Image (cartoon, rainbow, N blue to C red):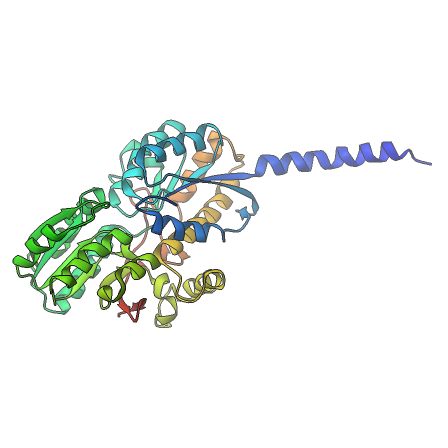
Length: 386
C-alpha cells in the first residue's frame, strides 16, 4: 500500500512550481488618489470605480495597493516612493490632481515605473520627448480637446467675449492657455480672474468679471470648489451663459451647486451621458456597459467622468499587461515595467468608457474627438447637450 506521506510529498512537488509561477505572475498596481482634502469629491468617485476592478490583469492575478494623498502634493510623492520602493508595483494609477502628477515624475524616471494619471492637464505628458515624461500616461482628455469643444459651442451660439475665472494653479494655467489658443481671434477674453481651491469667497473676482460685461463666463475649476464662483455669479445677478470644464463631473458639485448650476454647459467624456448618446456613437456600447455596472452599485445617475476614467485605466492596463507578458518579462521586475511602458505606448483603437485610445510615442494620452461631447446640467443631473 503506498505511503500517504509519499503521495502528499509527490503532490506538493507537482503543485509547488505552479504556486511559484502564480506568485511570480502577480501583477501589482499602486494607486494614489485624493480620498480626502479639497479634491475628495474626485477621489471618492475614483475609488468607487477602483472597487469594481476585476482581480486580474492580462489574464494574471492582480493586487491593488490603494493610498490616499489627502490632496497634498508632498504626501502624493511619499506615496509614490512607498509604492515603488516597498510595494514594488509594476505601475501606478493616479493621482487625481495635476500638481501631484507633476511632482511624481521624478520618482517615475528614477524607478522606471509607468504611471496612468487621473489628472487632466496635458503638461503631465508633454513635451513627449522629456525623459521624465517617458513613463507618464494619463486617462482624462487633454484640456486642448475639451477647450476646442467649448469654443465650438460658443461660436455656434454667437458668443464674442468671455470672462475667465480659474484656479490659481496648474489646472487653471492649462485651461487659460488652451482656451485662448482655441478661441483665436474669434472670441475675446475680457477679464481673467483666479482663485484658490480653498477660498471661502470669490466676491472680488466675480465683481471684476461682471464689470467687463461678458457674453459668457468660463469657470476653469474642478470638483466642488468650482461651484463657488458660479453660485456667487448667480447671487450677484449674472444672467448670461456659464461654462465649466469637464473637471466639475462629481455628484458633490451638483449637490453643492444646487439650482445655481442648472443650465451649466460643459464638455465631458461620453461615458457620463452614456444612455443619451446616439446609437451611432462609437463609445456608446462600452460606456453603457460600464454605466450599468457602476450604477448597479451606486444608484441611478451616479456615474461621473472620474469614475469612467478610473475604470478606463484598468481597461488600458488589462490590455497592456497582456501584451507585456508576451515578451517573457516577469511582473515585479524592471524588465516587465519597461515592457509594460512600451505596451501602453502602443495601444491602438482601445474603446474605454470615455473614448477611444490610440497612444503613441508622441501622444501619451491618446484620445481624439470621439472622447468629447457637450453636456448640460438639467434637472439636477448631467445630461447630453448635443
